[in-house]
Image 1 (cartoon, rainbow, N blue to C red):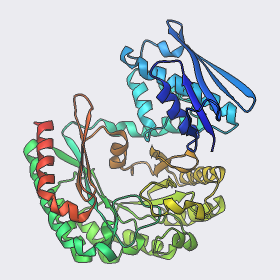
Image 2: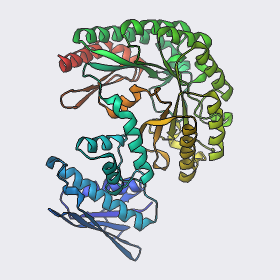
Image 3: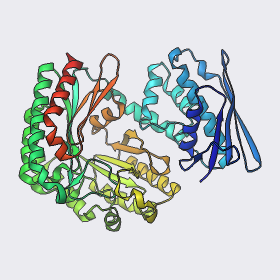
Image 4: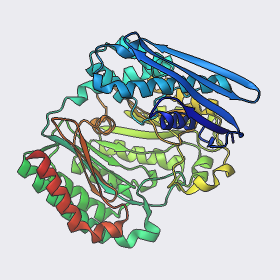
Length: 495
């Protein structure tokens, strides 16, 4: 673990420098001890009509490195003057990134100084200012430090997303959270409670959820709002007992009218929860997209990560979905699972090709604080950054051969190799809900366990968030308070 002492002669920028240093080296220790470790300094800074310049210095281990950054682009008149402080912070972060790369010999993140989870937001920000697609790509590389390949990826995804971002202000999405699973996967950080220990909460939870659904439905009708996408996630909604699942699937289309061209997705992430009856219930409810998530097609890995199903069960689940005639099938994979190599990923992808989903979502393993194995991660044989990157690249190549294009992406904290999660789709089968969740242009009302409501003000784009409890028992005990607060917030925004 390296120790660093940070000095910054630019007012208000020391925390910015610290954050960038920790982004580059998450294990770094920042110390005030002048005699210990390396010294990381930002020495000078100038900004004027000609542009921006700064000098950084890295000293320690009997060596001194200096880096000078000169940027004339910062003064482009298309940038609003109010954003100048933001642009200065970005340039200082780029200076830090370049200096740390030279000082340590480590390869910088392919995402440069972008640490947020939504890289395409930067593309749309620059596009709204009047920059062309080529100009944006140039700035993503030169100003934000992205590799050319990641800049091209951002541009490709943004161009697919753009037509989905112009919905009328009276359209909203609905998310339903079902916080139950057969078992909890070791890497999972979502609202997910095993039925073996929490199954007794299901009846009262569904009663409370029905009240919330009916109240929100009435509120949307009274405010003239229309639902254009409905996403039932969790958890694993299909883990519910058949009769309970059927009752919920009967209630949803009665409460929320989805247009013929709208999206109605059911997460059936655990293949062992899908049966012919469940698939027909989904079809009868009008759902047109189902997600069956193998993560890998190797039984040994499935056991290691606590999935509780086999690759053969994935194939049987897909057969059920296809037999029911549901239009769009998504399948999730994870790159970077313990013990796996690019050859394992190639074998998984070959199996997925035979199943021919319309959507393929490739996640890079991210170990969050709520995951079971975060505290004993050292016990697992995780692939190297290069091996994980090769897996992601291979998945992109196979998706392309399947006729798919990338249509949404996001990043996470603690993600292996500083990579990304990427959704691919056959043209015309994109998930508008996924796009809206990433770009945050549309109000999404979250119901059920762990549901997050995101209220987007049409005139300003400002966002207000409301959080439902994740715990089923807490959700049930607070349901009247939850409904009252949500209805008032929706009415105040749209009246």
